[in-house]
Image 1 (tube, one colour):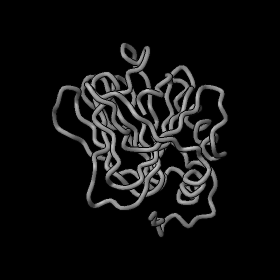
Image 2: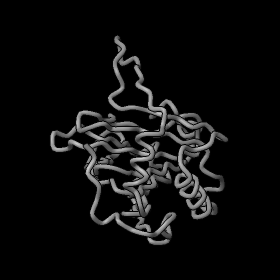
Image 3: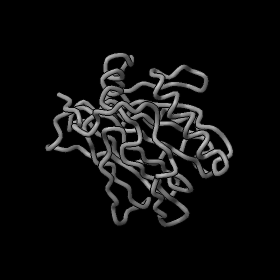
Length: 208
């Protein structure tokens, strides 16, 4: 069961200024911007997405067998309407803030529902299409029960941990998708659900 944050009771609407985001430079030309509590009313957004998004269970081939993907998914292609007006506002704010640095808008979106601590995503980088050779950005808005998002250099190294939930934002940019990996591990301490709202500059449906 999802338990909301006592700090999320607010009359504010729309994303908070992205100028408050803190940038952390990583190795190999990668960086992350982090902004806790970016979206006011994030608990209400979670409830709307949880009930209105057409979540689907997926199965994928892993080596010599087909397995259940340990989370529920929804993908929105370029031009598809997003499932909530707050996500449209969030995308517009990200497009404006990163326009000069990115040179293009965020194009596609994916949503992942982690139902409890047994759901997870393994170490990976979003290297679909030109993301395998060029710098791209991935923005992740987290709503619901906080979960750990881990980052480490590709091939192994010291792990960086961010606790994300209740409207927190992380943007991974520069070479991050090519030279670093990220994951959300299973956790016996997490009981409630979380939704990740991911915005991509490329078609990354296969990376959800």
